[in-house]
Length: 251
Ligand SMILES: Cc1cc2nc3c(=O)[nH]c(=O)nc-3n(C[C@H](O)[C@H](O)[C@H](O)COP(=O)(O)O)c2cc1C
Ligand code: SF4
Ligand code: SF4
Image 1: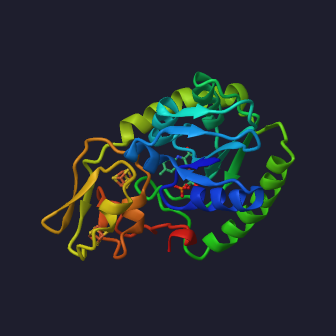
Image 2 (image 1 turned 90 degrees about the horizontal axis):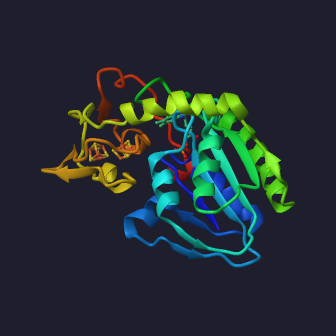
């Protein structure tokens, strides 16, 4: 069983490719939390995988909430994590290992997988011209990762003391930055409702045909702003001319 979380499709893409190569099924952590279906019995011959993006050298809030609330019934299964990133997973491995140990799971194999950057609220993501090459490089890397997982390889990515420090310092900014106050829709909105549908934490509600961010904090996954078909969602004053990155699996 591979548990995944994805805002703009990279981690879904990686989870699907690893699932195809390993014969595992995939489960969306955000959907599981929303529907409160949080009990999973894992068969002896199955593996337990977690595939998700790094946020601020740590783990997205949805992934942390899922791990804290899930009830996984399994005996002695192989456990792996694949952390997708724009540059580096930095200390997200440290946080993931700690969260998993709190539910008595030991991560056997950890990976950092470079994919296109998506954080449009903070900077300009990878351009549409550059993304296909980056995705091809990631695809080759996913083949290697899948082979490692099928061979039950142990070890992998370990950010060590640097990662622990990076997680400790950087992750505080995630909690400070994930406010929704700066989101708004502009005059281009066509009232399609997709932003409400794709939000993993139900923070967007269409009211009188336009999106309203109803929670003070969200996961900051970039799904609403990146997937809007007419780029009508803005965050503060700098996103108008920035690229919206969406992995082709969501197009
Ligand atoms: C809130 C947020 C924080 C991020 N922080 C980092 C980071 O610390 N390091 C990094 O390399 N990429 C960072 N990224 C980029 C994503 O981890 C990367 O693009 C990932 O593959 C997106 O996965 P997804 O498409 O499955 O949502 C961040 C993205 C977001 C939205
Ligand atoms: S996805 Fe974009 S166009 Fe559709 S309702 Fe939301 S803001 Fe409007
Ligand atoms: S409001 Fe937008 S950025 Fe925040 S969690 Fe929902 S979809 Fe992601």
